[in-house]
Amino acid sequence: MMKTDHRFVNVSDPATLGRLARSFDIRVLNRFEHFEAVNSKNGHVYKVRIAGEKIVCSCPDSIAHACKHEIAVARDMGFFEPELRNMGREL
Image (cartoon, rainbow, N blue to C red):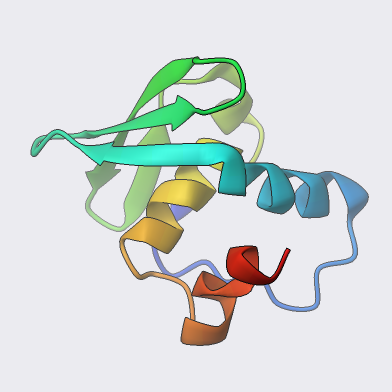
């Protein structure tokens, strides 16, 4: 789970950097009451929802930290700063 106001600034943790990079492999589909985060590499699909100020994913990783699916939805929803939203296009 991550908060909608969470920002990834000056990240140095390798695990977090890895999740940020892998989040660009996620395609976000709007299903109105929730989102589907589809991994374009392996086809796994997880349900992601916005609950107040939280982004909550159904994957097991979201229990411990902001998962790549939540990151992808946050970027798609525009919760990232403009320069971070465009970062994947430069990779």
